[in-house]
Image 1 (cartoon, rainbow, N blue to C red):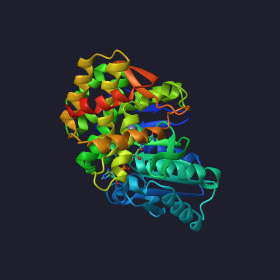
Image 2 (cartoon, rainbow, N blue to C red):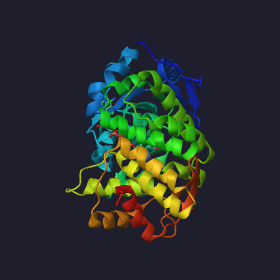
Image 3 (cartoon, helix red, strand yellow):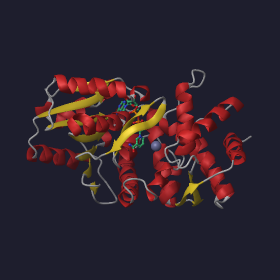
Image 4 (cartoon, protein in one colour):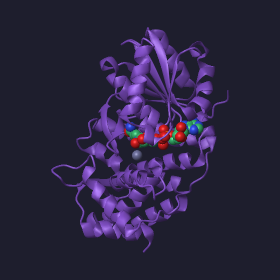
Length: 366
Ligand SMILES: NC(=O)c1ccc[n+]([C@@H]2O[C@H](COP(=O)([O-])OP(=O)(O)OC[C@H]3O[C@@H](n4cnc5c(N)ncnc54)[C@H](O)[C@@H]3O)[C@@H](O)[C@H]2O)c1
Ligand SMILES: [Zn+2]
Protein backbone atom coordinates (compact mmCIF):
# COMPACT_ATOMS: atom_id res chain seq x y z
CA UNK A 1 0.00 0.00 0.00
CA UNK A 2 1.38 3.41 -0.98
CA UNK A 3 0.88 6.28 1.41
CA UNK A 4 0.93 9.96 0.48
CA UNK A 5 2.28 11.23 3.70
CA UNK A 6 3.96 14.53 2.96
CA UNK A 7 2.58 16.22 6.05
CA UNK A 8 4.21 19.64 5.92
CA UNK A 9 3.33 20.02 9.56
CA UNK A 10 5.67 17.13 10.36
CA UNK A 11 3.88 15.20 13.05
CA UNK A 12 1.85 12.22 11.93
CA UNK A 13 -0.17 12.36 15.11
CA UNK A 14 -1.98 14.95 17.19
CA UNK A 15 -2.71 14.59 20.89
CA UNK A 16 -6.34 14.96 21.86
CA UNK A 17 -7.74 14.89 25.39
CA UNK A 18 -6.25 11.61 26.53
CA UNK A 19 -6.16 10.01 23.07
CA UNK A 20 -4.13 10.25 19.88
CA UNK A 21 -5.32 11.18 16.40
CA UNK A 22 -2.91 9.28 14.19
CA UNK A 23 -2.43 9.55 10.44
CA UNK A 24 -1.71 7.13 7.60
CA UNK A 25 0.53 4.08 8.08
CA UNK A 26 1.49 5.05 11.62
CA UNK A 27 -2.17 4.98 12.58
CA UNK A 28 -2.46 1.24 11.96
CA UNK A 29 0.75 0.65 13.92
CA UNK A 30 -0.63 2.66 16.83
CA UNK A 31 -3.86 0.69 16.85
CA UNK A 32 -1.91 -2.55 16.61
CA UNK A 33 0.13 -1.48 19.64
CA UNK A 34 -3.01 -0.45 21.52
CA UNK A 35 -4.67 -3.81 20.87
CA UNK A 36 -1.52 -5.64 21.91
CA UNK A 37 -1.29 -3.72 25.18
CA UNK A 38 -4.98 -3.96 26.14
CA UNK A 39 -6.59 -7.30 26.68
CA UNK A 40 -10.02 -6.81 25.15
CA UNK A 41 -12.45 -9.64 25.75
CA UNK A 42 -14.00 -9.09 22.30
CA UNK A 43 -13.86 -6.63 19.45
CA UNK A 44 -16.84 -5.42 17.38
CA UNK A 45 -17.09 -3.26 14.28
CA UNK A 46 -19.80 -0.71 13.71
CA UNK A 47 -20.30 0.23 10.06
CA UNK A 48 -23.14 1.42 7.85
CA UNK A 49 -24.10 -0.37 4.66
CA UNK A 50 -21.83 1.86 2.53
CA UNK A 51 -18.76 1.67 4.73
CA UNK A 52 -19.26 -2.07 5.13
CA UNK A 53 -19.04 -2.35 1.36
CA UNK A 54 -16.31 0.21 0.64
CA UNK A 55 -14.16 0.58 3.76
CA UNK A 56 -14.13 -2.47 5.97
CA UNK A 57 -11.96 -4.56 3.62
CA UNK A 58 -9.29 -1.84 3.51
CA UNK A 59 -9.21 -1.77 7.30
CA UNK A 60 -9.03 -5.56 7.54
CA UNK A 61 -6.05 -5.66 5.16
CA UNK A 62 -4.14 -4.23 8.10
CA UNK A 63 -5.79 -6.47 10.68
CA UNK A 64 -6.33 -9.93 9.17
CA UNK A 65 -6.71 -11.29 12.73
CA UNK A 66 -9.97 -9.37 13.02
CA UNK A 67 -11.57 -10.95 9.92
CA UNK A 68 -13.97 -12.87 12.14
CA UNK A 69 -14.85 -10.06 14.53
CA UNK A 70 -18.63 -9.40 14.49
CA UNK A 71 -19.71 -6.59 12.20
CA UNK A 72 -22.72 -4.59 13.37
CA UNK A 73 -24.24 -2.72 10.49
CA UNK A 74 -26.66 0.21 10.61
CA UNK A 75 -28.52 1.81 7.72
CA UNK A 76 -26.56 4.70 6.19
CA UNK A 77 -27.77 8.24 6.61
CA UNK A 78 -28.69 10.96 9.07
CA UNK A 79 -32.27 9.68 9.24
CA UNK A 80 -30.94 6.59 11.07
CA UNK A 81 -29.00 8.60 13.65
CA UNK A 82 -31.54 8.00 16.38
CA UNK A 83 -32.11 6.03 19.56
CA UNK A 84 -33.83 3.21 17.64
CA UNK A 85 -30.54 2.41 15.87
CA UNK A 86 -28.68 2.53 19.19
CA UNK A 87 -31.16 0.13 20.72
CA UNK A 88 -30.63 -2.38 17.91
CA UNK A 89 -26.86 -2.18 18.36
CA UNK A 90 -27.10 -2.52 22.16
CA UNK A 91 -29.30 -5.56 21.60
CA UNK A 92 -26.77 -7.13 19.24
CA UNK A 93 -23.90 -6.38 21.62
CA UNK A 94 -25.83 -8.05 24.43
CA UNK A 95 -26.78 -11.05 22.29
CA UNK A 96 -23.15 -11.47 21.23
CA UNK A 97 -21.94 -11.42 24.82
CA UNK A 98 -20.15 -8.06 24.82
CA UNK A 99 -18.92 -7.08 28.27
CA UNK A 100 -17.21 -4.09 29.84
CA UNK A 101 -13.87 -5.16 28.39
CA UNK A 102 -15.15 -5.17 24.81
CA UNK A 103 -13.99 -2.71 22.17
CA UNK A 104 -16.14 -1.08 19.49
CA UNK A 105 -14.37 0.06 16.32
CA UNK A 106 -16.46 2.64 14.44
CA UNK A 107 -15.67 2.57 10.72
CA UNK A 108 -17.68 5.24 8.98
CA UNK A 109 -18.73 8.83 8.52
CA UNK A 110 -19.92 11.23 11.19
CA UNK A 111 -23.16 9.36 11.72
CA UNK A 112 -21.32 6.14 12.59
CA UNK A 113 -18.69 7.86 14.76
CA UNK A 114 -21.27 10.06 16.58
CA UNK A 115 -23.71 7.21 17.15
CA UNK A 116 -21.04 4.57 17.79
CA UNK A 117 -19.32 6.76 20.39
CA UNK A 118 -22.62 7.24 22.19
CA UNK A 119 -23.48 3.54 21.97
CA UNK A 120 -20.10 2.68 23.49
CA UNK A 121 -20.33 5.36 26.19
CA UNK A 122 -23.69 4.08 27.42
CA UNK A 123 -23.25 0.32 27.03
CA UNK A 124 -22.62 -1.14 30.49
CA UNK A 125 -21.77 2.43 31.54
CA UNK A 126 -18.98 2.68 29.01
CA UNK A 127 -16.80 0.48 26.85
CA UNK A 128 -13.76 1.55 24.83
CA UNK A 129 -14.15 2.68 21.26
CA UNK A 130 -11.88 3.62 18.37
CA UNK A 131 -12.86 5.89 15.50
CA UNK A 132 -11.86 5.12 11.93
CA UNK A 133 -13.43 8.06 10.06
CA UNK A 134 -14.08 7.34 6.39
CA UNK A 135 -15.72 10.57 5.19
CA UNK A 136 -13.88 13.86 4.90
CA UNK A 137 -16.33 15.39 7.36
CA UNK A 138 -15.70 12.77 9.98
CA UNK A 139 -11.92 13.00 9.49
CA UNK A 140 -11.74 16.77 9.97
CA UNK A 141 -14.52 17.19 12.43
CA UNK A 142 -16.92 14.56 13.76
CA UNK A 143 -14.45 11.91 14.92
CA UNK A 144 -12.42 14.29 17.07
CA UNK A 145 -13.42 16.51 19.97
CA UNK A 146 -15.50 14.11 22.02
CA UNK A 147 -19.05 15.04 21.04
CA UNK A 148 -21.15 11.95 20.48
CA UNK A 149 -24.87 11.39 20.25
CA UNK A 150 -28.00 11.10 18.18
CA UNK A 151 -30.88 13.17 16.88
CA UNK A 152 -34.13 13.20 18.86
CA UNK A 153 -37.64 14.48 18.22
CA UNK A 154 -36.59 15.50 14.72
CA UNK A 155 -33.85 17.75 16.13
CA UNK A 156 -30.14 17.31 15.60
CA UNK A 157 -27.81 15.95 18.26
CA UNK A 158 -30.24 16.46 21.14
CA UNK A 159 -29.17 13.37 23.09
CA UNK A 160 -25.53 12.59 23.70
CA UNK A 161 -22.45 12.76 25.85
CA UNK A 162 -18.92 14.08 25.64
CA UNK A 163 -16.58 11.12 25.67
CA UNK A 164 -13.35 10.24 23.91
CA UNK A 165 -12.20 7.35 21.76
CA UNK A 166 -9.05 5.46 22.62
CA UNK A 167 -7.64 6.41 19.21
CA UNK A 168 -8.66 8.10 15.98
CA UNK A 169 -7.14 6.50 12.89
CA UNK A 170 -7.08 8.74 9.81
CA UNK A 171 -6.28 7.17 6.45
CA UNK A 172 -7.16 9.26 3.40
CA UNK A 173 -7.31 6.12 1.23
CA UNK A 174 -10.88 5.70 2.47
CA UNK A 175 -11.81 8.90 0.63
CA UNK A 176 -11.29 7.27 -2.77
CA UNK A 177 -14.80 5.77 -2.66
CA UNK A 178 -16.52 8.74 -1.03
CA UNK A 179 -19.17 10.33 -3.31
CA UNK A 180 -18.12 13.77 -4.60
CA UNK A 181 -20.96 15.62 -2.86
CA UNK A 182 -19.98 14.03 0.46
CA UNK A 183 -16.40 15.17 -0.11
CA UNK A 184 -17.65 18.70 -0.71
CA UNK A 185 -19.77 18.51 2.44
CA UNK A 186 -16.66 17.84 4.54
CA UNK A 187 -14.83 20.61 2.72
CA UNK A 188 -17.34 23.11 4.17
CA UNK A 189 -16.08 22.32 7.69
CA UNK A 190 -12.48 22.84 6.54
CA UNK A 191 -13.39 26.25 5.14
CA UNK A 192 -15.00 26.97 8.51
CA UNK A 193 -11.73 26.17 10.27
CA UNK A 194 -10.03 28.78 8.09
CA UNK A 195 -12.77 31.37 8.63
CA UNK A 196 -12.70 31.09 12.42
CA UNK A 197 -8.96 30.70 13.02
CA UNK A 198 -6.72 31.00 9.97
CA UNK A 199 -7.31 33.49 7.12
CA UNK A 200 -4.43 32.08 5.02
CA UNK A 201 -5.88 28.58 5.24
CA UNK A 202 -9.27 29.95 4.17
CA UNK A 203 -7.63 31.61 1.13
CA UNK A 204 -5.75 28.44 0.30
CA UNK A 205 -8.93 26.38 0.39
CA UNK A 206 -10.97 28.95 -1.54
CA UNK A 207 -9.85 27.38 -4.80
CA UNK A 208 -11.83 24.17 -4.46
CA UNK A 209 -10.42 21.11 -6.20
CA UNK A 210 -11.72 17.56 -6.23
CA UNK A 211 -9.92 15.00 -4.06
CA UNK A 212 -6.14 15.22 -4.51
CA UNK A 213 -4.36 12.61 -2.40
CA UNK A 214 -1.10 14.56 -2.50
CA UNK A 215 -2.47 17.58 -0.62
CA UNK A 216 -5.48 16.34 1.30
CA UNK A 217 -3.56 14.77 4.16
CA UNK A 218 -1.89 18.10 4.97
CA UNK A 219 -5.22 19.90 4.88
CA UNK A 220 -6.89 17.31 7.08
CA UNK A 221 -3.98 17.49 9.50
CA UNK A 222 -4.25 21.28 9.60
CA UNK A 223 -8.01 21.21 10.16
CA UNK A 224 -7.75 18.60 12.91
CA UNK A 225 -5.00 20.64 14.57
CA UNK A 226 -7.23 23.73 14.55
CA UNK A 227 -10.26 21.87 15.90
CA UNK A 228 -8.21 20.06 18.52
CA UNK A 229 -6.57 23.25 19.74
CA UNK A 230 -9.95 24.90 20.18
CA UNK A 231 -11.43 21.85 21.94
CA UNK A 232 -8.46 21.54 24.29
CA UNK A 233 -9.07 25.04 25.56
CA UNK A 234 -12.74 24.43 26.35
CA UNK A 235 -13.78 20.79 26.29
CA UNK A 236 -17.30 21.32 27.59
CA UNK A 237 -18.08 24.28 25.38
CA UNK A 238 -18.45 26.87 28.13
CA UNK A 239 -17.04 29.58 25.89
CA UNK A 240 -14.27 29.39 23.32
CA UNK A 241 -15.33 26.05 21.79
CA UNK A 242 -18.53 27.72 20.66
CA UNK A 243 -16.55 29.22 17.76
CA UNK A 244 -16.70 25.80 16.06
CA UNK A 245 -20.42 26.47 15.69
CA UNK A 246 -19.86 29.26 13.20
CA UNK A 247 -22.48 28.79 10.46
CA UNK A 248 -24.22 26.10 12.50
CA UNK A 249 -26.96 28.12 14.22
CA UNK A 250 -28.71 28.80 10.94
CA UNK A 251 -27.10 25.76 9.30
CA UNK A 252 -28.62 23.27 11.75
CA UNK A 253 -32.04 24.91 11.50
CA UNK A 254 -31.84 24.71 7.69
CA UNK A 255 -30.62 21.09 7.81
CA UNK A 256 -33.38 20.09 10.24
CA UNK A 257 -36.05 21.89 8.23
CA UNK A 258 -35.03 20.23 4.96
CA UNK A 259 -34.88 16.79 6.62
CA UNK A 260 -38.43 17.11 7.88
CA UNK A 261 -40.08 18.73 4.84
CA UNK A 262 -41.11 16.38 2.03
CA UNK A 263 -41.16 19.29 -0.45
CA UNK A 264 -37.51 20.22 0.28
CA UNK A 265 -34.57 18.21 -0.93
CA UNK A 266 -32.42 16.98 1.98
CA UNK A 267 -29.21 18.92 2.40
CA UNK A 268 -26.01 17.29 3.54
CA UNK A 269 -24.62 18.70 6.79
CA UNK A 270 -21.86 20.62 4.99
CA UNK A 271 -24.28 21.96 2.39
CA UNK A 272 -26.54 23.32 5.12
CA UNK A 273 -23.76 24.94 7.12
CA UNK A 274 -22.36 26.46 3.91
CA UNK A 275 -25.63 28.42 3.67
CA UNK A 276 -25.39 29.18 7.39
CA UNK A 277 -21.84 30.51 7.04
CA UNK A 278 -22.83 32.92 4.26
CA UNK A 279 -25.86 34.17 6.19
CA UNK A 280 -23.90 34.53 9.41
CA UNK A 281 -21.18 36.46 7.57
CA UNK A 282 -23.89 38.97 6.68
CA UNK A 283 -25.11 39.04 10.30
CA UNK A 284 -21.51 39.68 11.37
CA UNK A 285 -21.38 42.69 9.05
CA UNK A 286 -24.48 44.10 10.78
CA UNK A 287 -23.62 43.25 14.38
CA UNK A 288 -19.82 42.92 14.73
CA UNK A 289 -18.27 45.41 12.33
CA UNK A 290 -17.25 42.60 9.95
CA UNK A 291 -16.38 44.20 6.59
CA UNK A 292 -19.16 43.69 4.07
CA UNK A 293 -16.45 42.97 1.46
CA UNK A 294 -15.33 40.00 3.53
CA UNK A 295 -18.94 38.81 3.81
CA UNK A 296 -19.22 39.10 0.02
CA UNK A 297 -15.99 37.12 -0.35
CA UNK A 298 -17.35 34.33 1.88
CA UNK A 299 -20.52 34.30 -0.21
CA UNK A 300 -18.52 34.16 -3.46
CA UNK A 301 -16.41 31.24 -2.21
CA UNK A 302 -19.35 29.14 -0.97
CA UNK A 303 -21.59 29.81 -3.96
CA UNK A 304 -18.66 28.86 -6.19
CA UNK A 305 -18.56 25.43 -4.54
CA UNK A 306 -22.15 24.69 -3.45
CA UNK A 307 -25.33 25.08 -5.52
CA UNK A 308 -27.61 27.85 -4.31
CA UNK A 309 -30.60 26.68 -2.26
CA UNK A 310 -33.90 28.51 -2.70
CA UNK A 311 -35.95 29.59 0.32
CA UNK A 312 -39.58 30.70 0.06
CA UNK A 313 -41.18 33.05 2.57
CA UNK A 314 -42.74 30.12 4.43
CA UNK A 315 -39.41 28.20 4.40
CA UNK A 316 -37.73 31.20 6.02
CA UNK A 317 -40.37 31.52 8.71
CA UNK A 318 -40.20 27.83 9.59
CA UNK A 319 -36.38 27.88 9.67
CA UNK A 320 -36.29 30.93 11.93
CA UNK A 321 -38.86 29.26 14.23
CA UNK A 322 -36.46 26.32 14.64
CA UNK A 323 -33.74 28.60 16.04
CA UNK A 324 -35.35 28.32 19.46
CA UNK A 325 -34.09 24.74 19.72
CA UNK A 326 -30.44 25.64 19.14
CA UNK A 327 -28.25 24.07 21.81
CA UNK A 328 -26.29 27.28 22.36
CA UNK A 329 -29.42 29.14 23.48
CA UNK A 330 -29.60 30.27 27.02
CA UNK A 331 -32.44 31.95 28.88
CA UNK A 332 -34.60 31.63 25.78
CA UNK A 333 -32.27 33.70 23.62
CA UNK A 334 -30.61 32.57 20.39
CA UNK A 335 -26.89 33.29 20.47
CA UNK A 336 -24.76 33.37 17.32
CA UNK A 337 -21.08 32.91 16.64
CA UNK A 338 -20.16 35.78 14.34
CA UNK A 339 -16.93 37.38 13.17
CA UNK A 340 -15.00 40.60 13.72
CA UNK A 341 -12.65 39.59 10.93
CA UNK A 342 -11.78 36.37 9.17
CA UNK A 343 -9.85 34.46 11.84
CA UNK A 344 -11.40 36.51 14.68
CA UNK A 345 -14.73 35.11 15.85
CA UNK A 346 -17.17 36.64 18.31
CA UNK A 347 -19.41 34.49 20.51
CA UNK A 348 -22.82 34.88 22.16
CA UNK A 349 -24.13 37.56 19.82
CA UNK A 350 -27.85 38.24 19.62
CA UNK A 351 -29.21 39.44 16.31
CA UNK A 352 -32.37 41.23 15.22
CA UNK A 353 -35.26 39.52 13.41
CA UNK A 354 -34.92 42.13 10.67
CA UNK A 355 -31.31 41.19 10.02
CA UNK A 356 -32.15 37.48 10.00
CA UNK A 357 -34.52 38.13 7.12
CA UNK A 358 -31.98 40.35 5.40
CA UNK A 359 -29.41 37.53 5.77
CA UNK A 360 -31.62 35.31 3.56
CA UNK A 361 -31.77 38.12 0.98
CA UNK A 362 -27.98 38.49 1.14
CA UNK A 363 -27.51 34.75 0.60
CA UNK A 364 -29.97 34.68 -2.30
CA UNK A 365 -28.58 37.87 -3.82
CA UNK A 366 -32.10 39.33 -3.68
N1 LIG B 1 -19.26 15.03 16.81
C1 LIG B 1 -18.95 16.15 16.20
O1 LIG B 1 -18.21 16.98 16.73
C2 LIG B 1 -19.51 16.39 14.84
C3 LIG B 1 -18.98 17.40 14.05
C4 LIG B 1 -19.48 17.57 12.77
C5 LIG B 1 -20.49 16.76 12.30
N2 LIG B 1 -20.99 15.78 13.10
C6 LIG B 1 -22.05 14.90 12.62
O2 LIG B 1 -21.55 14.12 11.54
C7 LIG B 1 -22.64 13.74 10.71
C8 LIG B 1 -22.27 13.98 9.26
O3 LIG B 1 -21.12 13.23 8.95
P1 LIG B 1 -20.91 12.64 7.49
O4 LIG B 1 -21.06 13.74 6.52
O5 LIG B 1 -19.68 11.85 7.51
O6 LIG B 1 -22.22 11.73 7.32
P2 LIG B 1 -22.44 10.15 7.12
O7 LIG B 1 -21.84 9.37 8.20
O8 LIG B 1 -23.89 10.01 6.86
O9 LIG B 1 -21.61 9.82 5.81
C9 LIG B 1 -22.03 10.38 4.59
C10 LIG B 1 -22.35 9.27 3.56
O10 LIG B 1 -21.12 8.80 3.03
C11 LIG B 1 -21.05 7.39 3.18
N3 LIG B 1 -19.64 7.07 3.34
C12 LIG B 1 -18.84 7.41 4.39
N4 LIG B 1 -17.58 7.07 4.11
C13 LIG B 1 -17.57 6.53 2.88
C14 LIG B 1 -16.54 6.03 2.04
N5 LIG B 1 -15.26 6.08 2.39
N6 LIG B 1 -16.89 5.51 0.84
C15 LIG B 1 -18.20 5.52 0.43
N7 LIG B 1 -19.19 6.02 1.17
C16 LIG B 1 -18.89 6.51 2.39
C17 LIG B 1 -21.94 7.06 4.34
O11 LIG B 1 -22.41 5.75 4.28
C18 LIG B 1 -23.09 8.07 4.12
O12 LIG B 1 -23.97 7.58 3.14
C19 LIG B 1 -23.84 14.54 11.15
O13 LIG B 1 -24.69 13.69 11.88
C20 LIG B 1 -23.25 15.61 12.06
O14 LIG B 1 -24.14 16.03 13.06
C21 LIG B 1 -20.51 15.58 14.35
ZN1 LIG C 1 -20.62 20.75 11.46
